Length: 382
Image (cartoon, rainbow, N blue to C red; front, side, top):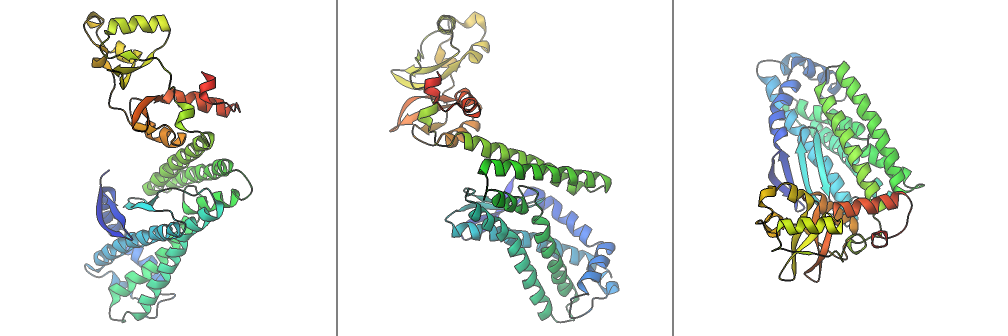
């Protein structure tokens, strides 16, 4: 869904997802309900310098003013929480691409997640610590607000409670929430990073199931959405870290097939089909005037009417709009780049010149060898 940039802090774009725009009025309505105000008033009155009268807080349109202020304050607090992560990451030289506030909270998109356990620990724990400090700041404001400013005082009292709860909730070891990342960091002290990630991800999956069960039994759709998010994110990050580990120390040079014999762009599809049968291959680089311009495969032939094979040129069915990856770039970076392109192929460049192609199939073979413990490069494999 679409994001709207509303400002920046330390050069980090702060974005609001459209899901939050839709959800904020609903959240304001939920908070502004009489029951919610009554519950929170009893809690806030345990530490507030002036007691809040529930009848006053629920009179007329006051509940909706409280709900709107509390809803905006909550997501401002979430934004500050994410800035805590960004600040800690900056101390280790890691930038933050953006901070996005959405339906289920906030996401700080770090440029990378450090594999050193101590760095990940402090970056992860910085969010909950920031929420606690935000709660303390809200308490200081509550003490300074005059007793006559009932609505303002109650909203800041509500934010004290909410920020503490936000810190506690985020410390649950439900990977990839903050607590789950803290767990992975602690596990990574004594075991490989990939194994630590797998264990933390299992904790995350377990919490996702728990949240889903509670969400169904208590008719809480937000818990169900959170369960889906945690399950999907934990599985995705665990798989990504595993792939990154398998591709460690490899470059594109190790994965790509640089000596594949090409086919001329002006060949007919009929001639190309004959050559595939003769060579027993299904994928070829396409060259035009000696320059590699794309790739053509059996699937492209299947999509072409057999009656037109004699008159259709290879250039007409070739895929030419491919991403480009440097020959000596890390294999994992190229794998990520390749996964974003529907063709499953990328040009391999050396000094600005296309010297070959790399495919998703090439990575599949390499990953299979690495999983089986065969420490050989794909060039030997082929």
